[in-house]
Amino acid sequence: MNTPGLPPVTGSTPARILVVDDELGVREGCRKILAAEGYEVVTAGDGKAGLEQFLERGPFAVLLVDLLMPRMSGLELIREARQRDADILPIIITAHATIDTAVEGTRQGAYSYIPKPFTPDELLLSIKNGLERRALSLEARRLREERERRMLELASERSRSTTIISALTDGILVINSERLVVLRNNAAARFLPDCAGREIPFPLDALSSPDVREIVDVVLRAPAGYMILSKQIPLGQSTYMVNVSPVIEPDGATSGAVAVFSDVTELKKLDTAKSMFVSMVAHEVKSPLAATEGWLNLVLSGMLKHDAAEEHRMIERALVRVRTLRGMVNELLSLTAIQTGNFTLKRVAVDAAAVAAEAVESSREKAAERNIEVAVDREDPGPLSLLADRDALAIIYGNLVENAVKYSRDGGHVRVHVRRDGMYATLRVADDGIGISADDCQRVFEEFYRVRGEHTAGIPGTGLGLSLVKRLAELHEGTVSVTSTLGQGSEFTVRIPISAHPA
Amino acid sequence: MPAPRTIFLVDDDKDFLEMERSILASQGYTVACFTDPRAALAALRAGAPQDGPALVITDLMMKELDAGFSFARAVKSEPGLAGVPVIIVSAVASQRGFDFRPRTQADLAAMHADAWFDKPVAPDALLARVKELMR
Image (cartoon, rainbow over all chains, first blue to last red; front, top):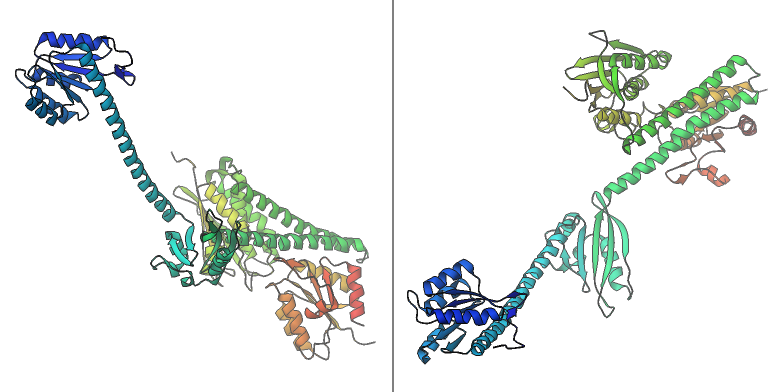
């Protein structure tokens, strides 16, 4: 009964066999023969018991079943079992072998038929053949299923690519060698309004931008060799960086072009801001430096016949410009520190009223020169304590009061109100000066923005003060706002929470 | 000896206005100062031509980028003032990538100017040029 070369097990686990026969001798005989070959064997004495074992202890690779049994016949059991496990391999063992029962058994899905009595080798050979056949059919099904799964994946991969392309924020156009646009994603339809409603494919000439058509044509006509053309193209209110690359076939021929549109409008704005900064530095740094140098030159030239009082006055004028310059550099450094996240607030208990009074005090001299009255309104004298960075608060209040004086007319009035306003310390600075137009009100807190007009010409400034005020106020979770009427004056309001962490 | 004629100084930066006035006044020139080129132009027109100005010295960047250029052009195109020499004094010789500094006489003529100085102007150099142009 030893059959070398016939592997009793499939895979790494032994095949499990359910033996159902009402004859104890056949059952136990089969068990011994099969167990000796390494199979795992479960037995049952009739069809009903067989089904119970099948349900409780399955799955089985082989169902070895007698045809005629009490309670449930072998054929019924085969039918029941195959309904639940189509892969099970039913083998009929019967003493009453007839052609009819064999045909019926096969119809019910029996794989083979072993007439009783049988030798152990006959049984093992039949089992082994059956298992091999089963393994083949399982493998075939696995391959079939894998192929189907791949097809599904491929389909979903395609739809994924389409989804990704259409969801890209960059615009994409694909143009074939006949100059037909064969693909455009949502962003391209947004960027290029003249291709939005068109059915694909449509001619490249439908695009109204000559720049776009031109760079696509250059790439399509280019001789073999990889080339990407990039160009900044303004379309409507926006500017796009358009990169066009050829689609190269394996034989080296160009079969089309892909154009990618990136919206660089914001970058252009940054670029403009950078130019404005350079321009601001050129004027705002060079002017005070030149004035300082000029005054010192004049003192040293001896032209003033060494009039000590006159020389002293000139050196003071030079000093004023140097201080302005230093203030500007400090503002720039603070602003940079805030922008790069390196500015940390040192919150301590600060008296807002005292800081406001200092701001007013330090603007007095400039105000007096131009006969401007600066007054502090306080309904409730006494300290107004809040948790804040003292230096930052001094910059905020100082800038607002200084601006009010700077943009007042000679002989004007500046009113400074400090009061507690619920959870906030509120400072209002009102002037009856030149005022700010509604458009400019929206922009005065932008970096480097300066109101340009008849009355502001000649007033020195960096365009950084108010943006610094805004950022410092916001670092305190506070706000700053402005209301103004051109020609009648402005009112700036800054509100800083009394406590950073309300109880 | 003819009556001393006035030098018109135009600059929106009062420091330069004052230091140039000091330089010129120290040599006995009569100087009229203006922070607004339009006020200067009005005064020039009112005085022209009999007691007209001897010379105009103007800043470049005032209200608008080209305020000094416009002013110089206005002076030179005014019938009674066309012969008045114009000196441009500027701290900003370049802006937004443009270099304004004149390199030739033709450049100066295109700017309607007779001389150009960078700020701060050296007192001796300014006085020498003023003397030459007023001759």
